[in-house]
Amino acid sequence: MESQRIFSQTVSILEKALDLRSKKHQVIASNIANMDTPDYKAFDLIVEKELQKVSGGKNSISLNQTNKAHMQPNGSTAEGVNVQIDSTQGLSLRGDGNTVDLDKQMTNMAENTLKYKAAAQMIHKKFQGLKSAIQGGKQ
Image 1 (cartoon, rainbow, N blue to C red):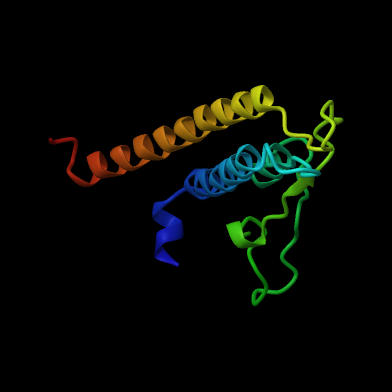
Image 2 (cartoon, rainbow, N blue to C red):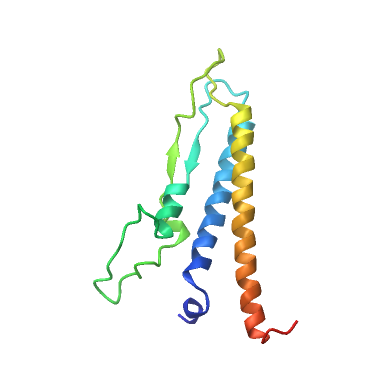
């Protein structure tokens, strides 16, 4: 595919990061929305481990392409990303069994938002560089 030659693996990783951060935001928002629901158990998506695997970090799984018809070793899609769900976000200090800690959820949301914005900014810079190369460095 021609687009794979134009775009580096970085764009694919950043795209997955944006997708995962968006899903994590939805989970945090759901936790906050259910903070008054009796027996609601807060949960979280653990995206860092998956992003580390996708980006080739220490804990990455290396794949070998044994047949040309098979997927590329680095060609996993965001749909195929396995994200761990953590439902052990703490004990309930309330009488209704709800485990949502609003301060923790707001902190998680702020951290996730910063990481989302950082990934969006990196992908924006990547496309700016591509645009500059196409235009020959002219504005």
